[in-house]
Length: 320
Image 1 (cartoon, rainbow, N blue to C red):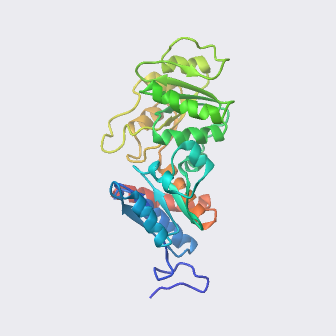
Image 2: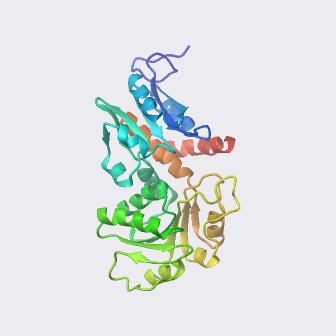
């Protein structure tokens, strides 16, 4: 029978095993248990990670239960990333800025909240070899994931950022929140259908209401990096893309889709066919989970270890 060694490291579940887990509804599709338990075994940490499907109205009880059990921490997924914030003893400034928490860490005064989607996305870009520093970036979508993506792009020094969304008001609201935090940013917005433009850059010289392609060419003649932040094209509706205009894909040098199932979305397929470098969202999923593991355990996971786990992540996704 396995047990802990002299340094209290992981060699099998026992009475010294620390609990961690995923809070959400539903959680049956998640590959987080594979990732976190593989990391615990890789680093010899006596931790077990489980998925907890939390029914509506039970989130507070779940958090209190975690405290009662001295659970080391939790990941939080839909639909609780915002609601959990009011139940915490503290929230990291970056998570406050993004407006969502996906990681809880146990501290002496209770759980503190973090957002690892932002650093996870940033590290995934680095891992994919996509640099956004001083580059033109077009974001598709202005929903929950877009908040973390936009924050990461600004932190990594992206040049011009264009947010394209079906609802222009929603794109404007997202841009406005981050313009306050990054006053030197150049953030533009456009609608996919009823096109419009808003910018905090007085130098743009764009004072009409062009469509997003005109905005892109008006901002710069250089190639763009596109980040797809919506659920369009996700399994099972794999034949859909948020943008079908071939002229858009001709403007791209690289494309990143936060979707990881299917492995190549229609968005990525179109981008690849026009010569763009592409990457899907599995790296973001992995690195946001890795960042949670780092927060709980006070260590740094190397890219070599991440690369070892990526193939297992791919297989775990296919089994879901």
